[in-house]
Amino acid sequence: MTALLTVEDLWVRFQTRSQIVEAVRGISFSVGRERVGIVGESGSGKSMTGRAILGLVQQPGVVSAKRIDFKGRNLATLRSRDLRAIRGQHISMVMQDPKYSLNPVIKVGNQIAESYRLHHKASRSEAKIKTLEMLKEVQIPDPERVYNTYPHELSGGMGQRVMIAMMLIPNPEILIADEPTSALDVTVQKRILEIMDKLVRDRGMGLIFISHDLNLVSSFCDRILIMYGGRIIETCAAKDLHKTTHPYTRGLLNSLPSLQNPSARLQILNRDPRWKEEPSVNAISENSNV
Amino acid sequence: MFEAINLSVWFGTDSDKFQAVNDVSFSIARGESFGLVGESGSGKSTILKAITGLAQDWTGSLNVDGDNLGHKRDRDFYTKVQMVFQDPYASLHPRHTIDRCLSEPLKMRKASNIDARINQSLRDVGLDPSYRFRYPHQLSGGQRQRVAIARALIQDAKFLLLDEPTSALDVSIQAEILNLLNDIKKQRGLTYLLVSHDLAVVAHMCDRIAIMQTGKIVETINKQTLQTATPETDYAATLISASHGFKRDAM
Image 1 (tube, each protein chain N blue to C red):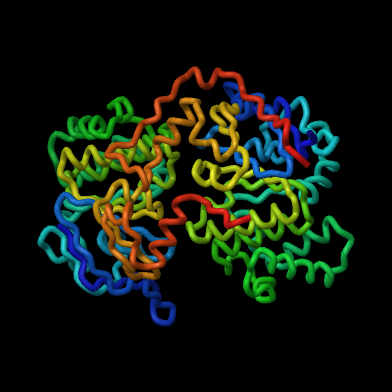
Image 2 (tube, rainbow over the protein chains, first blue to last red):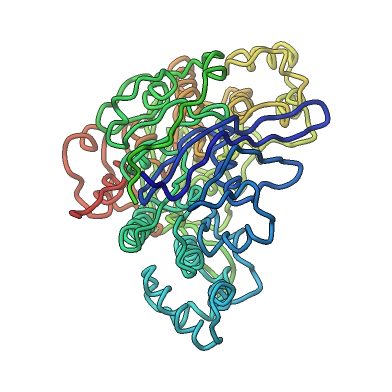
């Protein structure tokens, strides 16, 4: 068993004026060459987990972990210089909204080329060729035209494809996708997922897919971690989501309106304060195969 | 209760003029819930804007409760029709207390008994009257959306326009708000026009559903057909299959 990434006892704390807020409370999990979904409601710590791995938690947030092991290197103790060499090139992250994640005053082609040149010794013309190839790979119909556009000239779905192209061009081993399709229409969402799915399969990448959408994650990922109150309360194979037993997971599933089994009244989730005190489930998978 | 005939709505002027809604007709009976589904840019929210008077460049005819609407709305109109907006973080004034937000429409109409009515309206949406003097930032998203519903109902409006009322909320909170909307509707005999991109939500709430694409209604289906039969148009079928989650083609 050699996972690409093993996270052990990860904490994210925020010091506020009156107290310390713990956004992530001692979680452990691993990611192999597979699709791992992290699901939870707002405030469950799912996005913070993704950011903490890459050292992207902003002040006054403090990340601590026993280890964040990426192929034998402990990201938790790396200097920010060394972490920068890993971020982007080996592990990269796609954010929720392309509108806020792309530089609005630089042409998208140049932004993607920059991310290639940053990690490879390449000339401008080489980078441009690579960029056009990458744009084609994320199924942008007219790469030449899109290369010379500014982010505001693109639709949401196109913008998200540009983001994915930018994150994939250094050929990372792990991709963290934080709600990559939540801002998109369902039909566009489907296309983006297909692109990501294909790339992950063809390149043998590990994917951490962060989302609030249980149905989507269970149909897209291999393994699911369910987070609540900064902890992992349950983990399961994606296809076994309907077999889960934790009352929180059950409650979330039951509160969804369903097309197939309509009910007159939706079930309300009654939160048990004890859930917050339950120990975090260890989601280090023994059979994450490389 | 409501009827739209050959409604078209435009934005912009002259060369930038853009037709957002193209010749749309539908009617809603009293006590019915009618849903509009479609992707962004399909014109579903624009229809609501035209009804409330927020979009003024429209043609066709709009009829609420027997009265034809002109291009100006008077105060009485808003005692009949009210809107609940998508984002409860943006639709409540951040520097006004809940009390001020709820009392303003009553004061404008010089209503009596304002104090008791505010307490009652908070109780009706499942909030304790102790929330009355709080500011929006002291409430959670679900609580804010309850306030927005209370604000819409405080003038006893009978026809509510719901613009994606739960898309900014977590699913467990969404369930609470949808149940609340259904309960209130039953108690008061309200009529809803619900706009959403989430087919499952619309199917749960509405009796009839119109599917919109590029400013037109491409198909109107009722709840039963949605569950059993296949829809007539490809676009409706795509929307339905997309709401079932991600399907991986043969690997």
